[in-house]
Length: 415
Image (cartoon, rainbow, N blue to C red):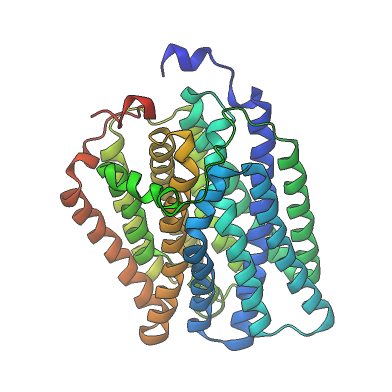
């Protein structure tokens, strides 16, 4: 770590970032608890792996349709305002599900409507959130801030499903009320955040300006490689959508076990991101990224064939730890190499790739599970992740050779 980095105040002394971290924690807690409730209810109502996959597809649609609009809006307007609006949409979904539970009118179609609202909200939330991080800390702290921002997500992914599963056994309505409370708290905290940096450029929304993010990514070969690597690895390796099947039919652990299964990847990821926020990756970035992608594939394969609950939890924890390191490297590269005036559009495209890999990955897993069974679906995904890592090392050899991060005004990351 350089002297310049050491001489700067720590992340805990960056008040805007601390408020933003807490807001991220609350919103993700709410989302995870709501996702658990929706997933369990859909499988309980329909008993269909394909319907679980449709949850991912429904979230994917607004992500694709809104991507260009989201990116331009994020660079044109106050990112905090966008975050508040996005989380308000997700709070509406929590109200919809909770009201249906109270009145006994919960149905498959209503749950899918709530999922669509969540998808619209997250289509705006994630790009604005990631683009806001660099404005909250000095530039040398960006890799550590990205790791800490990821750790907030992982803490919530651990606590949200685990607590949600326990509370669900007491009262599903109480879970919905807590989701609404957490969303409201997050909106309040974001209102208190003061971001530094230049005011957003209010350029007119021309077709060229909207597509500028694609042109920028295409001109940065290694940036293109980083983003597409995540797209195909998670598209093939994603297994989250099938966890209700594993909890109910394969491991027989019920809603509480489902909560623990959803929390396990985040437990491994949290350990990794906490370590990275203190000791960031500084050398051999490319090689380490490909190494952890390979570990991700192997862990997915182990989870696929496991019928022992502790082993399944361990495999998911290793999967989450490897993915966390990859996420920190990828997001740091994207944010550091992108000028602030372009961060909204590039972040929106990056989230389109990342988010679509998660949502379409769930749909792919559900469709395959309907045809071949859950075990075969997840196993195929793990093998596919390993194959993608090998192919990308051939297609993007300069990505493997990245050694250090380097700020955007200095060009690409140094080899």
